[in-house]
Length: 319
Image (cartoon, rainbow, N blue to C red; front, side, top):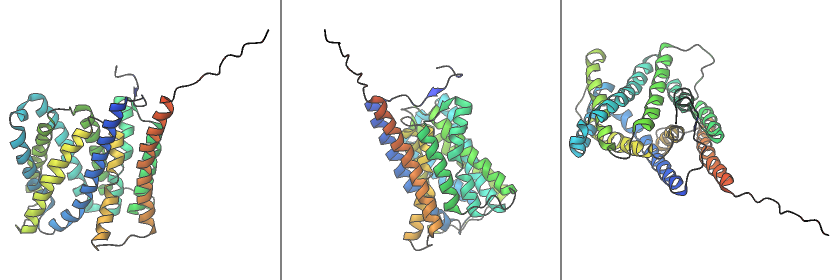
């Protein structure tokens, strides 16, 4: 299809394609729930070290494991080029959010970062001419409003600070990472592609240490958190995300991943770190509703299109 035409995401998928998409969406929901745990883990780890040292160790551990699995596939020129590009956007997302937190509040940072759920369909339409379904647009709007309530961010009372702008750039980087993963991921070579990305993030994090200032206490909790996040939240989870994006759309990925703060809040409450008020419950409910509208609305639309039309029988006049 030419780059000047609208790519019809509204085309009716075949039954095997629909089943594969459901599997991919389910896998994304599981890793999003898992990513929610890492909020608590990383928060504890950063009391023993600076963010860039933690990122360098975390992604190095994940990269080493995936390199041992991928081996020669890692050296394929196309994999190196694509992994370098994807890894750069992935690093920018982490780095810009971290630096932005210096001059903005956590609630504003969480909300602005979550705006990638809006940026993905907008950029996909502008750059790749991919038009999401109406149900996906409705889900995106619900998720964005839910993110606003969940975080309690107030962007109207004051102008955007330097930290806010940096965090917006972080959201943009995450949106590009999701879109380009959909474009470049293939059904084979997933491990090698992710391994290159993790090496890029680890090396760029190391390069930032002289400017950010390294501060590490080599405690068992710091090393354990880096190993846990490196192996599971980075290596395994990003491999699953990349695998899933060969079977579903970038907009659905963004919507499902927008539930990460919902899971994080649930874990935090379960562990006794905080309690949620009505605002947080409403926000989390709107995010979940947005995902359900996008998922169920799309399936209902497909079933309606698949239903055969039955024309009225001809009535012959009697003689």
